[in-house]
Length: 230
Image (tube, rainbow, N blue to C red):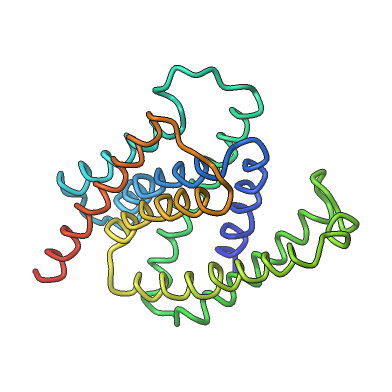
């Protein structure tokens, strides 16, 4: 249950606050920093081996994250964007810790039951933030248009129910370090969907960073295939 408070409770509360000042495309690509954190935490907490090849692949993805976040573009970021970036990075750190702890838990617990308990705990945590925090309250929730509520429910079903159940199932047979590399594909889908539905565009530097992320994910797939064969 405590893992559910960590993710999605704390992590996605921070991420949604960060999205107030950061574009969806940039936020999605910044989540590619998560695999590097997971590999480091898995090595420290689970004693999972970190090969040079795995470290190089994930480091390549991290280079892409830095480029997408605008650190290499020379652009001046406002205080709001900096605060939003820090909030999203804190959310990423929470998710990384969640993955490593879940890897240990799924060795003995049923993935679907684990996901259910975690999501209920996350819901309670979010309700507490809504009731006690300075970032809105029940009146704001009541006046939301019905179409936004439907979108929120659909996204919750896709991500928190289906995706989490599948991911926890995979963690039973896959090392957390290798599984983490597939997170790099999330930003690729995020950017594509933001392009289609929100009309957001990447700068030249961000596009190159996205290419780094995609290439690192492709190399990781090859590494995973070799690992399963061996």
